[in-house]
Image 1 (cartoon, rainbow, N blue to C red):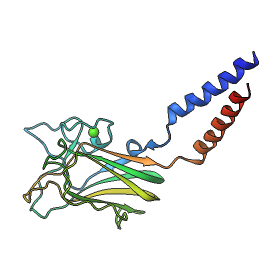
Image 2 (cartoon, helix red, strand yellow):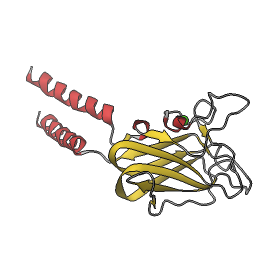
Image 3 (cartoon, rainbow, N blue to C red):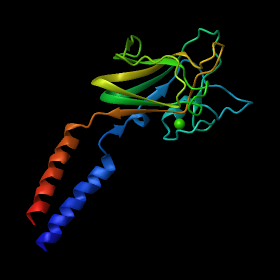
Image 4 (tube, rainbow, N blue to C red):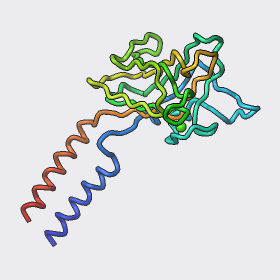
Length: 198
Ligand SMILES: [Ca+2]
């Protein structure tokens, strides 16, 4: 009976871990907006909404990705803003682009910016990328940052210098594990000790 209780406790801890993971993607919790428009392809107003960048689907298609309106010139910039209800502490951002690896349709030049009010923006250190052709771009922050707003700021949407659309299939933003989760880590350690003492 005692053994059963210990086993149940261990299972409960493992279930909590499998539910929370080590770090959570909190992009779906954000309010997502853009000032760069949403492209209407062939009358399909249901396509390319900006909130599709955090719908959990990394495919690039009209019902799972964002495509901006066409830029006014070859120097147009584009942006997607994520706003949380309160400040979050993050240490990784993953960007899923439109094409396969090596494609010129993948977001070429971009950086991440943070803000406390949604109007004054500061570049995230070392986040600037130029000449990218990769489909998936993972950015690990050397030091976690705490912010209420995060912006993907695109200065060149494709690697060819023409008027173009920005295309983003998905953005994932990973939150640093909270103290409550760290507490669970301790519980996991205790459970391990109990198991070893059997
Ligand atoms: Ca998506």
